[in-house]
Length: 287
Image (tube, rainbow, N blue to C red):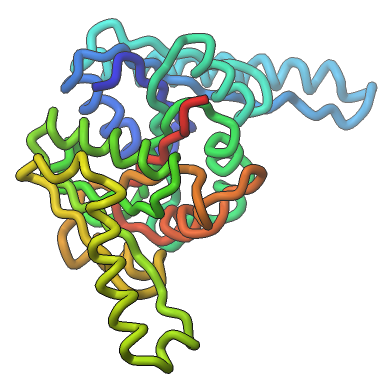
């Protein structure tokens, strides 16, 4: 499944659930697990305070190193060989660079929880990691609904774009390996001018139902997969399905038609990430 997992931590309660997910995934796949804590560069108030600031900074770094060592003691009880480091730098950049340098194939990050993924967190760290990481990012809400860490039910939205199809392929491979069920959903809205013509609207709905299987023929042979088209607002429908069907994991592409622009996490993925009560695995298209 995954061979090297990178888990950024901040020693807060928010990150504890993410660490649990990272540990469980590493245990399941016998993967390497690496923890990282990034400390922003110190800000000196002026030359006269430089010495005091340096002394304080050194003390802070020693404390963080000690906390990392204590965390690793616990983690290594379940994942042998787990490593951890405290580094100085710009957190999003250091996380992405470390993932690249270590050949990590998954980043696991904690968030504030369902409906509370604030700009302070998402804008400064998770959002930037999502926009710049070349590997999948698993976002774990701090206070979300209880789920099976190794998912039993997976939901994957598709808009038929190449990146969405890649996400479906990833989710399908994951479902097959884990013995999980997979729900592939295309959510569409009927334009107002089409609604005014009942026959045309019904024709569109029938076409959408057929289109899902036409665009994803690889799903037909899998007994554990359901593919369907649903009418409604994409983000709202996806989140509602997650709650109604007791989904454990959402797998979504970071780009696609109306999903995420090339320069800013937004659209459907953005809204799902901000409101989901369950973990969201955001995949990246291969280039």
